[in-house]
Length: 134
Image (cartoon, rainbow, N blue to C red; front, side, top):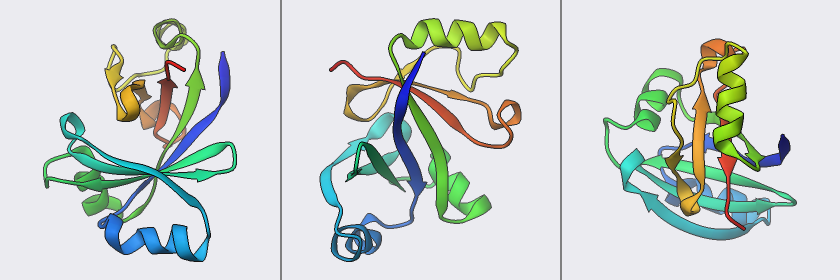
C-alpha cells in the first residue's frame, strides 16, 4: 500500500548553483547532502512540508541522471512513493503487467530500499517505490 509521496526527484547539473534558490529564495530547509556512488549521483534532500525534494546531480557522465539531463535537460526526474514492503509491492506490480526497471530493490539515498517502474508502463513518468526503515 502507498503511504505517501516520499519525495520528488529533480535532475540538476549543479547543486551549488541551484541550492540557493531552494534555501534562500524558497526558504526551505536543507536536510542533508550525500553521494550515492552506485548510482553516480550527489543528492541534496530538502524539506518541503511532509514531502522532500531530492536534487540529483550527476558525478559522472555515464550515470542515468547525466543521460537524462543530456536527453531532456534539467527538471523533474521522478516521483517516489513510500511503501511498507517494497518486495510485496514489486510482486503486485509485476502481476498487474507493469514493467520494472529492476526486478529487485536497490539501496538508495539514506539507505532506503528503492525500485523504479519503467516510464513506458506509467504514462512516461518515472515512478519510484521507496521503503525506509524508520
